[in-house]
Length: 198
Image (cartoon, rainbow, N blue to C red; front, side, top):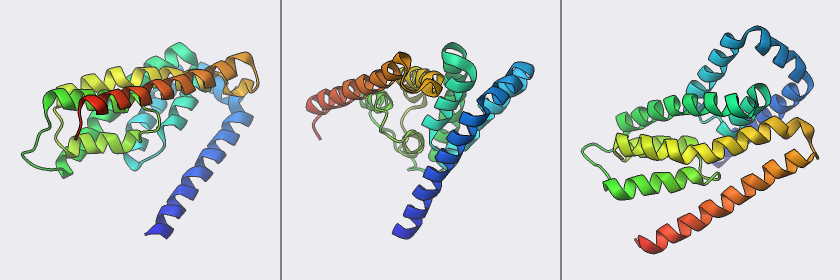
């Protein structure tokens, strides 16, 4: 089992490196294609967001690509909408496989999902499945997810927009924003745990 996990992690890392190198050396070609085929590009990117996370593809890579290809505003809009479709789809997959006749406390479930969405280090894919598996209410799940993913999405898209300008002021600021978001989210989790002891 450990060997398989190591192999999977290695494949993920290699795929990230390969994708990053390809985008870096072909970014102008890709951007030209997008300008000439705007609707198709948005459709393909949206489909990638809907499908790939189901197979545990690392979503930060998708968000970074969105920033490179579409810029901060449209990258954030398209990514948020596509991610919400995926979030609902993965919830129902988790629900289908999950604990029957079990639903978490409404208030606790909303706050738990909201705070977990704020934390960049929490695996997006597994959280989607877990929420469906445990039967968290769909309304609270969707609302908390929507609010929770916006800060991280915008920051990752911003990083993607500036990643090709490595060393620039904008690049370092985007990394600073990501660091600040992580600190704030960890603090929120600490406060929440203190008010909701197990």
